[in-house]
Image (cartoon, rainbow, N blue to C red):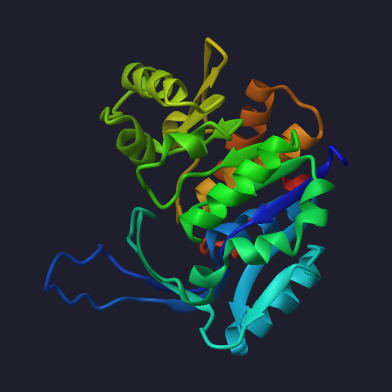
Length: 303
């Protein structure tokens, strides 16, 4: 097993982004500004973040046999990602995400899963040799939950560190949580998993302790400008975020998770890994787009 090898199992989307003054309410039409397309998907974003920050990454994903899928595969290869386990679906199109970004940099996202919904446990069975060679498995929830559970259970049985970014938000079964070494919900996701509304550091501590009690190993609750709360064993650590002026928060969580995996693969302790991840995420929110916002290692002070 290569402790530095990171396998990301997750989604690939094409993001279609419109900048607006504000995010529309029900029935409202808003005249937007700039429109652009940018490769995205939580799995893909995290794989690109790992690659740009210096990690050794293999990406397991499923794309459509269409222009978006072919473009994505070419871009991943150009980033230095091992694409040997990216599968093509014969019937479903590549996933797409429709994203609205307001003047404050906040976003609203609707995802059509496409081929991502057909990344199944049988597909993972075909890449178990690659997973066996990994030191870290990084998962999210834009692929079927059964696939996430199968992958996490297999990796845990092999003693491979499993990081789960539980996004989009969902209630998670205890069996899955018991296979997770590190879970990284944001405030919304932590509130849903724990059943405790997270609004500050105090409530974040309550939620983190509850999530750990459900079976997860260590808990990191990401809190945007407030940084991140880490629960490692029985010890809480609050890691502040660098102060920046946000332009677009799309993919900030993905950058955080990719950076966290890289830092852990380099044997940083968990609080230091979270500091590294907070800095990478802070840089990303100062830029537009998903993968276009992801920093390179030489752009961080913590190199």
